[in-house]
Amino acid sequence: MPFSGKATYTAGATLPEAAEDVSDLVAIASPHDTPLLDALGDAARPARSTIHEWVEDELLPNADLINDSTYTDPSADTSFVVDHADRFRVGDQVRLDGAAEVMLVTGVNTGTNTLTVVRGYGGSTAGALTNNGALTIVGNAALEGADADTARFTNRLRKTNYTQIFSATVEVSGSELAVRQVGVADELDHQKQNRLRELLRDLETSVINGRAPAATPEGSSTVRRTMRGLVGSITTNRFVPNVGGFPADTELTEEQLNAALREMWKVSGSRVDLIVCNGQEKRWINSFIGAARRFAADTHTFTNLVAAYESDYGVCRVVVSRAMPAGAVMLLDSSRVDVLPLAGRHFHYKALATTGDREAGQVIGEYTLEVRNETAHGIITGLTG
Image (cartoon, rainbow, N blue to C red):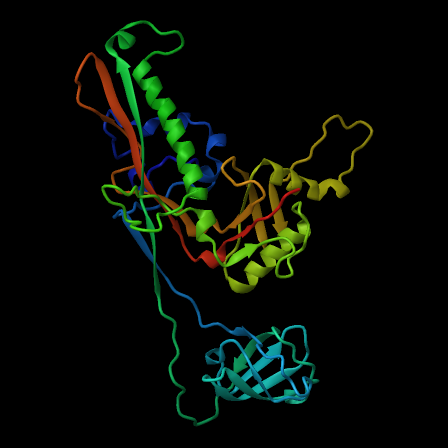
């Protein structure tokens, strides 16, 4: 449903709004002006504080990287260094990605991050260990009658964003209100609508590109409070052509898009369902079907459009937003993204005191962005074409 700027619980027909509340005018705004907000829809709840917080948790990791290039015999060495030895336990079966060999962990030294293993466990064929090779824990086997292992757990994390006030002043003279306008029934109402369209446009741009202040992000009498947007919130899954093995093309290719989706699938249990891009990047996505396009002699319509991209990792709706930075494509799990109004502060009109022959007021709203589990989202940057 289109983004109305309210939390769902305040949008029902049984809950009347104040007569001066401009929120009902949101439906007039063109949906093409705020495509990402429309795709995300209204939040199920409002924010309750200018400092908005939520809690995240994660499972214990079951993979790590080898951090050792000093092998005596990489096909026979029984000890090697990893990045995080505390992820392993004695009794773990581990497998090097891309290899058939399974190893059994018999010793873990967290001080030196060293694992001691049985090579070629269970009759598997020993292969060569490689630095930066990815190790996956197949599973742990406990000894019958053994004491319980030391408990392991993750710490829940509290994440934070900040509300941002969006405001525009409306002022119409008494004479302007009195005269008959061409094509406008009410000049004050017309100005409210235009300012609201502009603020919705600004909200979409802030949701994508906004940054919180480096100091005093909660705001003060001299520091303006701003929300952190999606581009700044995504820190783990950032892909750049020809960096870290990512395909080197400078125009977005299907190979790049699939490579990014695959890497995200490996580190997150979520499903990407939104691809957000600008116009040029959308044209690159459309070109994916170029080689497979076929037209008969009596075909009079040329179609070159990809509205949704279906891969092994899910079906993604393609959203074109003018607010997206050029050369970037964002991959989102929309179920983990909400644009929240501060309670009672969705876009509305607030009349100002009359100090002369005019009507004046503010179209005002206060919103924040909640991006849960940033590893569920990704961004490709550095595309130049």
